[in-house]
Image 1: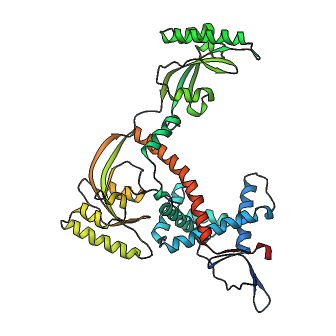
Image 2: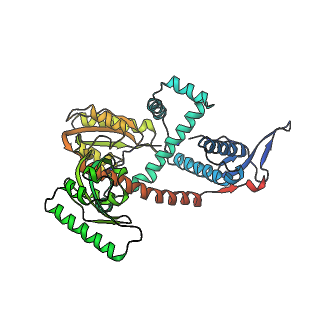
Image 3: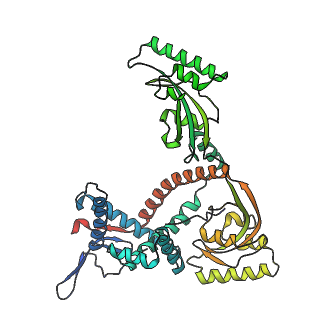
Length: 436
């Protein structure tokens, strides 16, 4: 299935006349315009642009209370960042990836909304920070462009198998438990500092004996009161409700594998032997969601297919389906989402939040059997048809989705590094810092 996921960067480069031997440009009245610090294919990076980017980074460090290094210490790293951005923008343009006015307006509207601002208030806030709205628009445009490039060239090409998800869930039992709280009871059979082997053995035997009594039904609070050296012994060993990130590190993996009422075997630490009981837990409830079974047809925009051409093609397909043509047959023949095309456009059961907002919104408007009119997302032009809806316990899917996201992010980092090395290898890059 295609990856209908979200996005995050396009400044269109300024054009300067350049020569191969001169690294600054002067007007006839002797005023120097700027220095060229790097050439990236047919593009330029100037000293003024580099300095502005360095100043922004140093200001950010200063505002965060961090030590601010001298400009010269970060100059090379910042120039490398600008070079990589130029390479990515150039690649995106060559692939026909673009940012429409609607995409830009939607993103800026979302930024304002997420900050509880109107567009007018956003403009005012930016002006107070000394940022022009045009400059802000250009930065957001670049974010969207580079995000679309990353999605198309990297993220959408990453495969995560069920076996990889199963393996991660087996290794990391904390996935999906961020909001879970545990009611824990605790018994500590303490050891003095520098305990002798005999003392360690005696404490271990006592802890094993207590654990066996608890497994046979003995009251945990009573045994804690009688035997525990823990600070909570007088409260029956209760540690109260603890969030996942508040659990002692010794308990974290053990608790993750326990069910309500379970008692752990003795756990050794430098302070002694611990026995814990998972008395109760909350925040790990079933998650029922409304799932939609849907199918779609996607027409991508590209260097060869303009936005208008893609929309026109999809409108023609919409008319044919409305006239009685088979959706599945047309999806197999025309859809650019090759993962779903082979299945007649079927996306399977779609949970809320697993597709981009625009696609979700258009799909949610439809009743089973209804077909949407053509609409656009950052992936291209779509028509979607709802087949069926159901209420579904999504707990397991949420867990697997989180694991898939973790694996994808890990793979994306390596894939991005490899992609950037390839872009650099294929590009003409000339750095002129030493010529200044």
